[in-house]
Image (cartoon, rainbow, N blue to C red; front, top):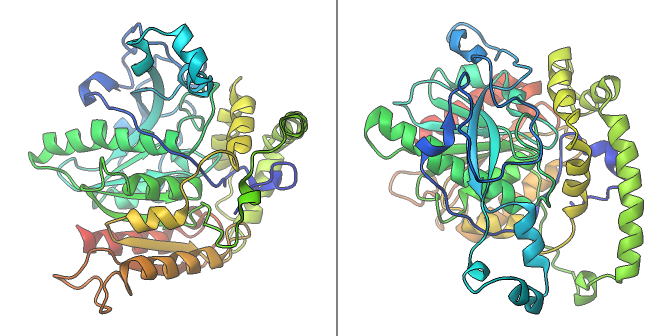
Length: 430
């Protein structure tokens, strides 16, 4: 599933495979949460270069929303709530890691050499449902936002405490000029669970909270990557993959396939890519083009491709940093170390649901077939060596697949079937 920017740009509005890894340390939830109608606290820690939403938000539209009677999430053109994510993922630390070792030592003190500067990124998110119930976290795909779960959040929130967040670089979250890889979004989800989801559950019920994580496309890869992370895997009860992106290991790859490219060729290629991607970005962010792309990936029923969905994709793309972020996300794919789907599945210790749009023109059903085969190889048939996965007292590492009559975004194209599949799954694991 390697992404080729120059030839596959039409694919990139909602889908992107992912790579790389490293960790960060979270801070307390009370330090990082802000209400919608309260200005963010001033801080000496630098913030991201850009944010679509203002620091001072209007009261959330969700305050007057009744999800028990409405099946569709109201659209907010400025986002919902803000979480201040303090992290070491920023351009300065990335530049420092790329310096030769001698240069690092000559420009830093001994104490600096082991300390990374932290940055606060403003992250858009929403939550709906009772804090006394188990948590369900939803993660969108490339180019989308939390609003893409507009037909899922209200239904799911009647039974569970539902969260959805905008990944860094997308939606109404900050769009800093930095390199983007899978470790950024993995750590964002891990920290969000630790700083927001778990504390709110403890406040509501007084007990340690369990969570299920679901994601579509890039968000599906991120959901799996975060679910396998040692920092939160003990509280993750299940993972739901909705046409998840990601790269598999190539058993036939040779040393030459992974050799470092000629630096001159690499620089020329990067210049060409930047030009092509810049032109493509201008083209693909036009409403008519967004509509066309969405209809292509909603092949069974494109009735849900409406003006609000198009606006929710176009508006964040108007951010001054959006084009550069778009370029960096795409070009980072395919370079550097990467976390393969194979390795992630092997590390996962929770049940997995594949709710797969079988008519996906981008990520074919063969990807889900391979995930099932790999899972069986690592954890046994349905997660148990004797075929008893899912049975009480047996291994929790089972996998289930639900075929959805939809394309790349089954949760929005066929929300009724996906909502039922998710509820059946989480009812079983919680």
